Image (cartoon, rainbow, N blue to C red; front, side, top):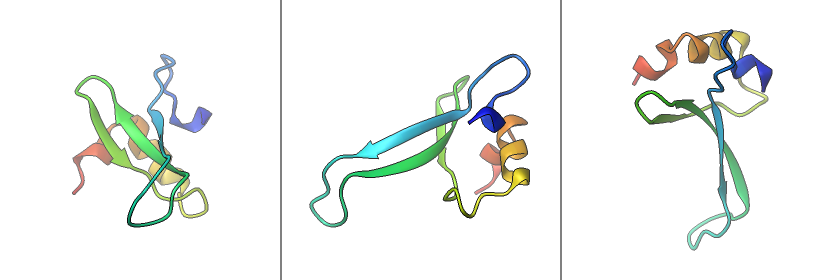
Length: 67
């Protein structure tokens, strides 16, 4: 996930693994954008749906301002 790393080497990607789910599918991986300075996580689009613009908005932190 080099596209989610800035020039200083900060990594804005985290992965959530759902091992067990009573009401749905289990053993899922969910990609999350992570802003470590304030501890904000936001779900990323699936790999097939994410655009280069989305990667850039995560790195320049505007992705976290949207609802």
